[in-house]
Length: 137
Image (cartoon, rainbow, N blue to C red; front, side, top):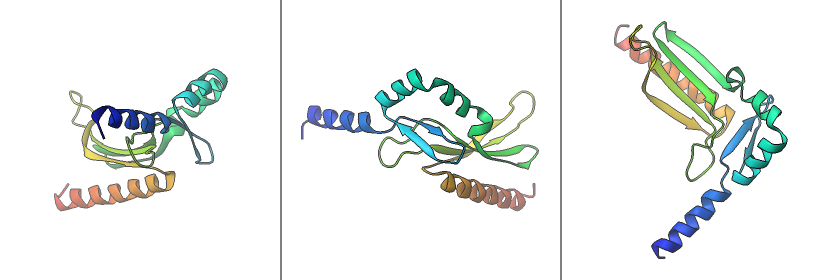
């Protein structure tokens, strides 16, 4: 396969992959290719905006201490290049005070389903709690 053929194959694959999603109140993700997303913005913009509210997109948020926060949310954009779409992400943050509030820690995981996201959030919280206990914090 030539480079040109490979690029054509990849662009076709990526073009057909979902690029955006909408998390419904029942936890179902509706996904859209580029063309479908453009149509969504033309025909269902109010619904998309309502379901894009940060409070609705937050799946779980846990303060392990007053300085360490784990947040899991629906990101609305497919974070996968290949494979199943990744719609959810867990990040951990540490508050270093007024000059450096809420800086990300080296913790990031992405998930395809809301169930995976909830389970991943709980696992990361448990792991960080154990690390903090071990460090005597």
